[in-house]
Image (cartoon, rainbow, N blue to C red):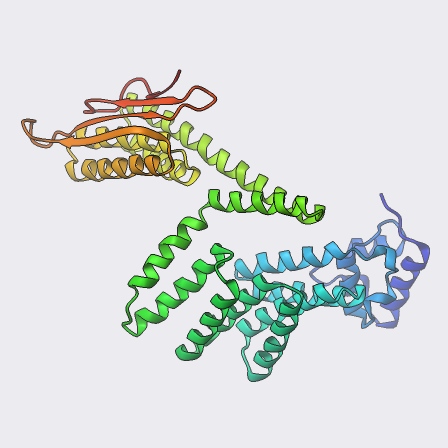
Length: 404
């Protein structure tokens, strides 16, 4: 347990007493009262975030409680990340408080680049909470300052915040201008943010009965670009470039993001396979509706994970389930989705050849026939093969994917 320097423990206690606060009052809702007690007794070293809270409560500058060695610039980044998470969760009050703490900390460290970013993030939150000409003017100034330090992504997001507020106030023309300005800042980068801009433009166009076809095509392209696997690739590329340029810190941050996404994608693929197995166990036990639900979930998970083979298998089995139950319409839908999944496999180079055919002539009414066969490109593990024939019900063997 890290101990507190005696001068700091004494300073916290004296500042609290001079402010006329009890330990409970100083703690407020953000810090446990026992934490304040342990700090004052020298048992716990507070983080800069806690010290920032204490400084704000007693009306002292943060510098009064810290020395240069205690200030960690990454703490500003952490506070801003937390602010962003709280804002996305709809807790704007906490987001604003965290961003304000980041501004205070960046001011104390003298880091002008982080201060510019923190001020921009804080004002972006404030303009979405209480828009006024004064806040808009401050935000415009902060945008210029942040752009000077290269914070283009944050600048773009600030335009999105302004546009959303203007749209809510019925000022569509100004909202459109803000969105156009933000898209100009993005300049084709950060597709996950670009989707938000295009979605906002579509909303505006829809209310004015405008032509949204071009926007729809743009949204399709951006949607593909911000697929989880595309984001992973982008992070990996960013990490490699940063490392090559000697920026180890940025490289590590990007690599960690890529790794987290990769793990999430792998987990989805594994869950999809498990759901597929559960579906067949349910079907064998006569729980047809449960099997259909598991297969539907497996399809969605496999699609998100880019596991096209499991997606096709699940859709083929789902088609068989619906066929056996006489649900011709749902069987047809599953079949069409399976065809689309085969096409996606071809697009990403997983197929050397593939056929998927639906024929009903000469068959009993309501019965479906699916003839599907595809051979995957051989990889270092030996490739894979998927075969399906008559499917009045899912096959007893859940593993239609075979490894050679």
